[in-house]
Every structure is written in C-alpha cells, then in structure tokens.
Amino acid sequence: SETKPLAGQKALVSAGPTYEAIDPVRFIGNHSSGKMGYAIAAKLKELGATVTLISGPTALDAPKGVNRISVTSAAEMFENCQKHFSDSQICVMAAAVADYTVEEVAPFKIKKKDSSLTIPLKKTPDILATLGAVKTVQILVGFALETDHEEANATEKLKKKNLDFIVLNSLNDAGAGFQNNTNKITIIDKTLEKTVFPLKSKDEVATDICEKIVSIFADK
Ligand code: C5P
Image (cartoon, rainbow, N blue to C red):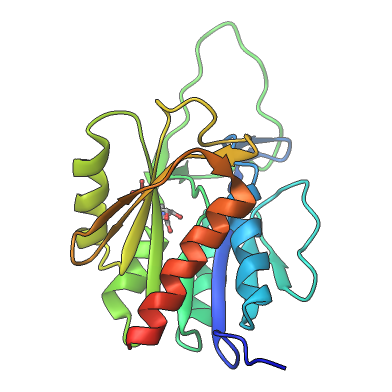
C-alpha cells in the first residue's frame, strides 16, 4: 500500500474548552465544543501520524486510534501539552483555553449574599506562545477567533507566538466558530501568504488545515 504522508510522525493536538474551578460546584468555562480540534486529530491520524489529543471537557468520542488525554483546567492542559511537545513534529493548538483562572479556589460552595460578589482572577499561561518560544523542528499551528480587525490581530498572534501558520475564524461569518458543524477560515502563514476558504464542514476544514501541514512538511 501507498505510504501515508505523515507516517512515522507524531502530532499533538489540543481541543475543547477549559473549566476553571471557582468552588466545588462552579467553574468559568466557554462555548467551545471541541469539534474543530477533534476533526483535525482524526485527519492527522488518517494521514498516518501518531496523534495525542489533549482535550478539555467535551461531549465527543475520541477519534479512532487517537490517544486522548482528558484534562479540565488550563493548568492541566498546559502541563500535558508541555510534556508531549518536545517529542512531536506537528502541534495544532485548537483549544479555547481560559485566559484567566481563579486566584484561590473556595474549598466550600460560596454562599449567596445580598451584596454583589467579586472573584479575583489571575492570568493563565499562554500555552501556544510558550511552545512557540521553545520550538525547534515542530510545525506549530494556532487559531484566532476574532470579532474585529481580524487579519491584523491574527497576523500579530502568528508572529508573537512564533507559528508556522494561524487559522483565522471570524465570529462575523455566519456558520463559523463555536458549536457549529461548519467553519469559514483564512490561513495566514509565516511568509504572510494568505488563503481564504469558503464556508465548509469542520471535517473539510480539517482537511484543508492538514493539507497545509503536509505541504510545509514536504518542504522541510
Ligand atoms: O491569543 P489567543 O487566545 O486568541 O490565541 C488563540 C490561540 O492560542 C489558539 O490556538 C489557542 O489554542 C492558543 N492558546 C493557548 N493557551 C492559552 C490561550 C490561547 O494555547 N492560554
């Protein structure tokens, strides 16, 4: 049989939201379904890679043959991504990681009072930027979900996080982004070459993203 283009390569994919605990029963989360990251993990596997998927809480089944590691918080996602990065040739960070976490998790359920409630938050580490700062041979891919100045913001993240390319999805496009089964993306690579794709299913979008990875890989 024909050799698959990513045979023998290891890929690391992050997907889904993170949950930051406030107390034993509450958390700060977001609407990420994990569908985009899972579709990419499945596609990379299909292309022959050995895939590790670091997943926040989702309702999805692990793609067949993919090694899924389930995590909850940004801190856990960070730890697991760091652990697997040095060993990977391809790294796609598609998770919607919380930007802030609670300074101190309350040990008991916070009681309702008549007054307002303020919860002090601290920044979480930027996983993708941290990996970008130490990357060697890895093809590193990030996402940007923007509501304004989309391309300028995405290009800035591409550079700041030292990515090979960034996948921009705009919340202004109908059918794109969170929860949907479709997505409309623009890929901007490190040479600043820009490719605009039409609205497609997340599986087809995953194919476009993975084709870009394969083409960079072939040029290495
Ligand atoms: O800067 P922003 O959060 O918009 O960047 C989005 C990209 O960075 C996504 O690829 C996301 O997975 C990644 N990210 C990360 N760790 C964070 C925040 C974002 O890996 N703490």
